[in-house]
Amino acid sequence: MKDSGQGADGAQALKPNQLATVSKRKLQANRENAKKSTGPKTPRGKAYSRRNALKHGLFAMHIMDFDVLDEDPQQYEELLQGLREQYRPIGQAEELEVERAALCWWRLKRVWRYENVVNRVARRDFTWTELDRQDEWLKEQDKEANELIVLLQSAKKEIEEGACEIPQELKQKMFAASPGFEAVWSGIERVTQKELNEPETAKFVRRLSAPDRSSLPALQNVIRAVGLLEWLRKSRHHSIVEIAVGQNAIPNCEALDRILRYETTIERNLSRALDRLERLQRRRRGELVPPPLSVHLTR
Image (cartoon, rainbow, N blue to C red; front, side, top):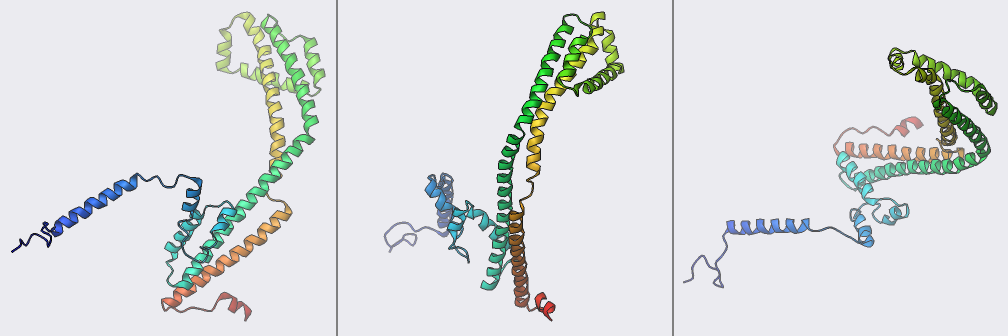
């Protein structure tokens, strides 16, 4: 008589708790092996894996539409799954309305994408056109600023060599190089004098030697003027680009009309899909379903 603890082939039979232990070990081994998987590595494999989520649904056969528009089908699937979790459709009719709503939201995203591209192209083309048109004016302004900076650097050198003031002849050359610079220079002198009269600055100035104290205002005027001219030179180029960008912050009339008509149509379809979904769910729950709003409006 065979031992009851052995099977027909003489091997010891596994008890239920032993079977559970083996299953747990196998499960753990499977998990460890799964961690070693890195997924698809080739571009072709990655392209196929992107489509893994789209296995069913009304639009599952249109996977290539995402590739044509350089879109990620996984993001669409995440949108669809999110709406399913929110509305919890039951039955094919409710499922189709959820899918229709997901497609409407996705098409609205395309509207924003189209608008952004239209603006980017317009800004790119118009910016270069505007820079070309303003090129001569910019060159004249830069030339004038460069002449002034050269004269100011010459004045700075004379001050550092012992002069207490900018020579009057040099000032006249600066004012002649740029007729509007004389008024700017007067403003610079007022700002410098106000700064030197401040208590903290005045305390620092009193510690300087007599020659340095006497030349400090002229030196500060020159430094401030050079900084202002360099800042203006940069801001001129920036302002032209800013103007070009600002003029194309919204699409042109043709593109804007297309966007508005397309967006209005999508939003209308989205509202209808959600309204039909709500009516289907209320009817399924046995609730009173009033006639559609369009019925009231036509009466």
